[in-house]
Image (cartoon, rainbow, N blue to C red; front, top):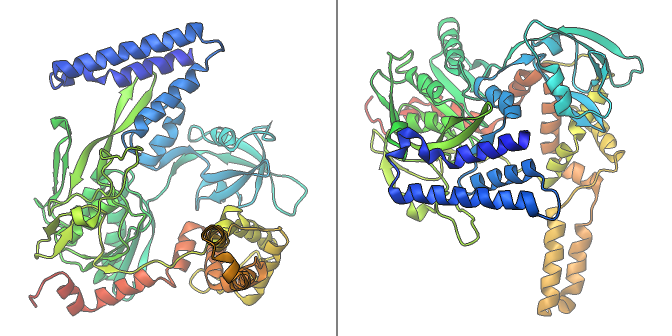
Amino acid sequence: MKAVRIGIIVFFILSAGHHSKLRAQLSEEQRFEITRNLDIFNSLFRELSLYYVDSIETEKIIRNNIAYMLRQLDPYTEYIPEENMQNFQFQTTGEYGGIGTVISMRDDKIIVVDPYENMPAASAGLIPGDEIVTIDGESMEGKSSSYASDRLKGQPHTNIKLKFRRTGEKKLREATIERKRIHINPVSYYGLLREGVGYIHLSGFTVNSARSVKEALLDLKNNHQITSLVIDLRNNGGGVIEECTDILNFFLPKGELLLSLKGKVKQMDRIYRAAQDPVEPDLPLVILVNENSASASEILSGTIQDLDRGIIVGTRTYGKGLVQSTRELPYNERLKMTTAKYYIPSGRSIQAIDYSDRDANGKTASIPDSLTTVYYTRHNRPVRDGGGILPDFVVEEENVPTMLYYLDANALFFDFVVKWRENHPNIAPPSEFVLTDTIYTSFKEFVQSKNFSYDRQSEKALESMKKIMEFEGYYDTASEEFRALENKLKPDLDRDLELHKKQIVKLLASEIMKQYYYAKGQLIYELREDAALDKALEVIQDKKLYRETLGNTAE
């Protein structure tokens, strides 16, 4: 039955051109091509189903065909089956019914990874590293993390009984937890950076993000008397456009053009203007961005830049200038597809990749600077389209050695802190914590005990160079020098743990803060040593630099 449903869904996706509102916009030739190809597809699949020598996995084949078809368009157009609707709604709203924790599969065990602060799981005493053994009496042995997650979720105000094992303990612990409506506040943290300078960290643009930002802004204004503000959009992948435009309205005057959407279908066109009087029309503003700031983050930062309302600091943003909307499909399923491109007030699009322009192999590439167009901000500062938002002050992020990716991917930071916490129930708060040499030595010993190995790019490059030298006949004349270099680059875990100590200490301390003080504590700690934030503070506290950067010469 499910296979039949999938087939019907494919038919509805492919036959969207027959929708009455769109039919008039399709030419006779286009309608014929759609009908002809649907007939071919249906006939082909029927013949395969009847006569192919082996049984056909209908659902698998059709889902793969859907995925392939949508991949030819862009990465943001996707089919959402009914079983994934709950996750999709969580991405949009930031809400679900459950106990408020992230779990993962580790060594065939269901492990608590990240219990959210002030949510039922944390309130019941669950901490990172706890193994969930049973849920409502059902053993989780052999079960997947998605299976366990489905059972942890449920209607608010219903109870769930857990048995779990803490690291270092043999006896199981028990907890009865009341599910609640879990809402992840998109304002991860806000507070004072120093006297007069407020800070708001926004992790995403989910439903009610604007309300959360406004509450933080008013608290900073009324109770902390801020005279300037830093908004941190780093690693913010975007979300609901209306939440973004509402936040822009806090800083921009009523009637101001904020954003334009333009689609192939006229119904998708839209213009957003500030609808209300601003909360803070003159408050000096700096926005932090990085390469993972995308979509709504780029609308917010780009509009502020185009209107010379504030200064952007960080690295070039992701470059996603495409807008998605959802269309209903049969059987409670959805198609999320790109329906428009957006343009910020200067008239520019920040889309980095033209997905309609592919090479012979079907690959796309970023738009080169030579093909971008210059636009101008309100104060006549030049800005370019394509390739995201280029900050007014570029502060490159520190390169992360390959070794650190492998330490993280193997969960060695996580596992060490879980074990270390057994003997360290209390530590200093994020604003004061220092990772000592004693802690780092313990971490090194822990890593060395795990037979940790990692893929070194220098070793790969050296092997490739050797092959080229042999092919071109140079290896014999330079073999001695090559072997000397090879010896220097031999794997040495102890050496590399010392070589990259500074970066490892940062990530290890960050994991410690997360496990003891949740995401907010982790962020507070990381802000203590932050080059982009330091630059933001320098700019926002230098009135002359701030004014001149915006092209405003008036005193």
